[in-house]
Amino acid sequence: MKTLKLIPLFFIFLSSFTTAQNLNVTLRSHLQYTGQTCANICGYVDSLGNEYALLGASHGLSIVDVTNPSLPVEVYHHVAPVSNLWQEIKVRGHYAYTTTEGGGGLKIFNLRSLPDTSGIMMHYYTGDSTAAGNMANSLNTIHALHIDGHYVYLYGGNFLNGCVKVLDIADPWNPTYVGHYAYGINNQRYVHDGYVRNDTLYAAHIYPGFFSVVDFTDKSNPIVLNTQSTPNFFTHNTWLSTNSKTLFTTDEVTDSYLTSYDVSDLSNITELDKIQSNPGSGSIVHNTHIIRVAGNDYAVTSWYRDGFTITDVGRPQNMVQVGNYDTYSGSGNGFDGSWGVYPYLPSGTIVVSNINEGLFVFTPNYVRACYLEGTVTDSLTGFPINAANVSILTTSVTDSSNFSGDYKMGLPSPGATYTVTYSKAGYNSKTISNVVLSAGVVTSENVQLTPIGFSVNEISDNTNSLSIYPNPFTEETTIQYELKNKTQPEACLMITDIAGRLVASLPVKEHRGSIHLDSSLIPGVYFIRLHNGKDISAPLKVVKLK
Image 1: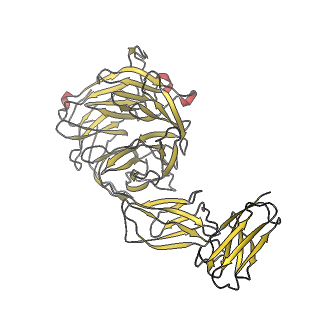
Image 2 (image 1 turned 90 degrees about the vertical axis):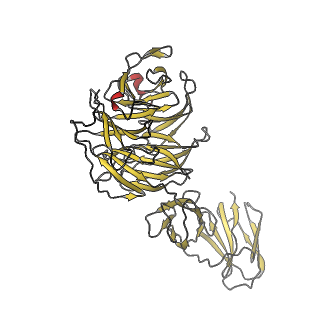
Image 3 (image 1 turned 30 degrees about the vertical axis):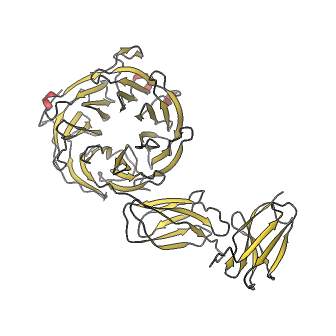
């Protein structure tokens, strides 16, 4: 163990860093680690209120005083026996627990003496013999870890084929092994990472591409409650919302997503939304964390070559990116750039670790998103339109409606007013002007698109009436109509199928009357509207049976 104020092994300096993106985040400083790579990052606050970044450098744990975010100072560096790219850190109380794929088991640092670094103590835990099992001197490599209460959960590594191992750290200096979780067979047993709250584990099974929810109340008998695949089938990291109702996951592959799920009912886990930092770039997401600021949840996420992002997840069904900073000079697919981000220091300072570029220190500005949501439907049938394009002009924000016709989108900051366009092949486009979007407010716009070939100037359900009997029918049925305004020369009954295609146009010559439909109409669902000049009645659904 080495305790030093100045480290001759490294040349650490502040530097300016030019970035391509910067939204609601201010770069305060950048600390380079010459000759080392950097992995994940955590934070610690001493008894005097000084704030520290705990960075997993390839040569060992680096502790940097970031109390003044513009002037970070490395105050301690533990040089590990073996250098390794993978370093993970979590803190409970005055103790930091670190893991690595380089071996040595679980490293425990007592940080109680800070800011006096001479009193920092460290030792290795490699297993013990307990009533719950025997792992004495068997724990060597560990990929990641998470702490819940007085239990630390260890992921990956050599022991028990990479499954989850649980240690009791009620005595923080002397852990004891109390159980493990191994799901399925082969590579499903390996858990890459996970999040635990109140004895419930959300385990990231990276290779089969799903997360499992595990009741770990009884550490010797974990119970799987449900599993859920993630969009890119390479589940790397999980994190829970403040209210425990939403789970967020990341998939560590090209063109991946930060994804939200409703986990309020574990028997019915539902995907809510997914978002990319830079759509179309192929960027790879890595680690996400949820922080609550001014009563609202935000996801703070590292994205390798895209740096890190801040996403308003207060409406998890409509996640909106409201902040970002690109800490890497390149872009696109690749395992370079931002490894980890830590947003929980009391001052609000965010610290970010870049693999080859070192430590970045930021001051964030958490802002609420401006939401635009609604439904797109067919003006003739009233049916939802799938895959309609919705674009907010003068911005890059677009969305497509789903099978229910719903769309959800948003902006990171309000403007004066916006113009929104709606389009779909086979339909007349529609433009809505003077749309007002406000921070934290959901603006609703429900839009009807008219199929090409139809012109709808006014829809009036109280000027005309339609009825049909029998309905459904097999052989024939009778349509009764009444025009309450003067009959126009072009008055007719228009019949469309479920796709909105015109099947028949039947002329209407009288003020009131009836028309028979016979068996020549093929079985299916149809809609009938009474057109009388500019007046068009509401659609009447008709079903022809076989």
